[in-house]
Amino acid sequence: MALEISGTVQWQAWQDRVLPPVERVREGLWSIPVPIPDNPLRYVLVYALEAGDGVVLIDAGWDAEVSWQALNDGLAGLGTTVENVKAVLVTHSHPDHLGLAGRVREASGAYVALHALDATLMGADAETRDKWHSSLLQYLTVHGVPDAEAAATVDGMNSDLLFRAARPDVLLQDGERIELPGLDLRVVWTPGHSPGHSCFYEPDRRLLFSGDHVLPRITPAVGVYTQSPGDPLADFLLSLERLERFDVEEVLPAHEYRFRRLDERLAQMARHHTERLAETLAAVRAASGATGWELAARLKWSRPWTAFGVQQRRFALGETLAHLKLLEARGEVSEAAGAGDGTARWYPTR
Image (cartoon, rainbow, N blue to C red):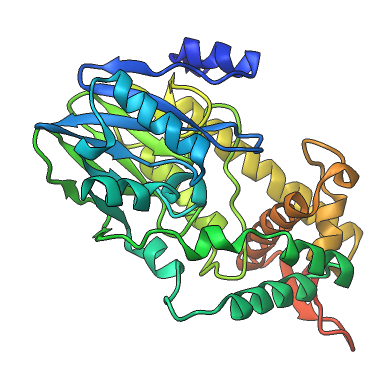
């Protein structure tokens, strides 16, 4: 049975390339689209839930004036204001989800909650931009990005968004119950897209607020980057399996539109990565000793590699490395430093 689109108004808005309206999803639950300026994802769906005499937000949106205005307008449409927000539950630390949380906290006194692993990933306050830039540049060059493109990639990064992001007041843990009036939400740790990515499950209404972990149309970026611990793709695939045991009637994602048949979508996403692993292994066998950058350029993407901008190529490199790392853990490829240049190169093991 195929995935069933339940957010039909959102789906139509996606087709028409317009912002969907604020929607009442259930009693005491609304979705508020908050724009992401100049981004193909277009908007984040912020969810507002009644909690006693206030509201709780799941995610907050991008830190920009147009986004802040949309969030305020959306709350006004519900008959409330940002000052009545009691908590911001953030699915993960990426700027389109965490970005406005600090501003909401300043306006309302709400607490900001984030999984402990994503809070750790944000780094110490004392970390300098220079150190961050140099770490990113080293990561890019080690994996074969040409010097000029590596420098352009670093220069084009908006590090301000990272360094001004709100530090959480509450650190979430897997299985934790959110203690707020009139709410019964459970934290479901789903690492992969980020180390601490978490969904929120409402058992009474069988709703899953899935963040970026499960989207109806695209698979989230799962990559190896400068601060990526462990094996993110292995974590992601295990996270998909974990969700199979939850009784979910409707999925409320952070992008695109609501849908039903979570089981079918989980199977689709697992198949996608099985196919991508096979394609990546074939690329290593066809170009033994290639860098991650060279292998990324050989893979099939939604658009030609030459049409990608520098930041899109950075994400593509990260995703390629995530697949290589899982193949390495399975004993199918190995990584070694290239003779003389220090770049990381990949070889088939058989």
